[in-house]
Image 1 (cartoon, rainbow, N blue to C red):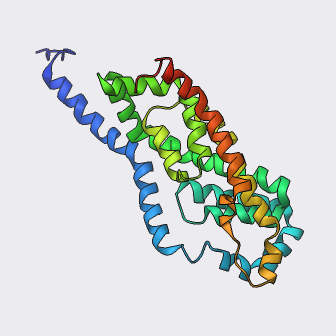
Image 2: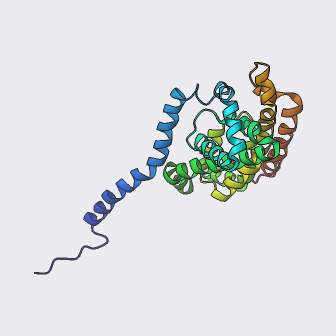
Image 3: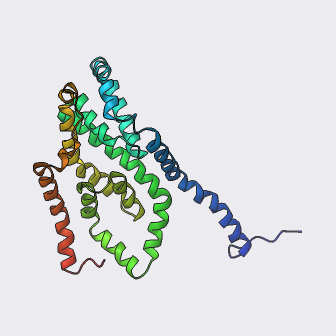
Length: 257
């Protein structure tokens, strides 16, 4: 006796499909869950490891290794910095200063920007693949204010992304996660990150260039330099330029937030 073929409209078939989709849905969240767990553990255990004290205590060994194995030092620095950013570990500021200390201003800025951008891209993709995909889908099918927010973000996506990078008060991990949760395009996220972090990378790398003298005096690097008027002023000017198109569109009634 022939068995009856299962119709696509059969409720039993739909329930089976739903059961099959559930494990896939859980797996999509595993990268972001793993990052959250590692970030929590790192915050509790690595505060004293990825620090200026560690850098000061190992400065001679690091400089000697750099001089003997320059290529390997670059690869090791990039790998460590990418991991710090991708896993939201403490020590990103220390890593940026270290880039200047080990490689000088030009190469240090370039390496810091590359590492921070790749690390940011990794956590962005992890978030967008799981929770971000779900939230973005809900925003697309949403109505009312949610729909207006999504349309406004689409109209000013690049400007908002640049603002998130340029405003010093926005934590780096927030600027990595938030765009993924609202459906920002990967390419726009990538290039605005690379461009937007240049001013901050320049400041931190510059601090690192003079780090040897700071250690010789028995002092700790002063990261408050970022807030000095002659430094924060130009950065706030760039923020104003990035915000200007958003303001113009809002005044013209094109953005409905």
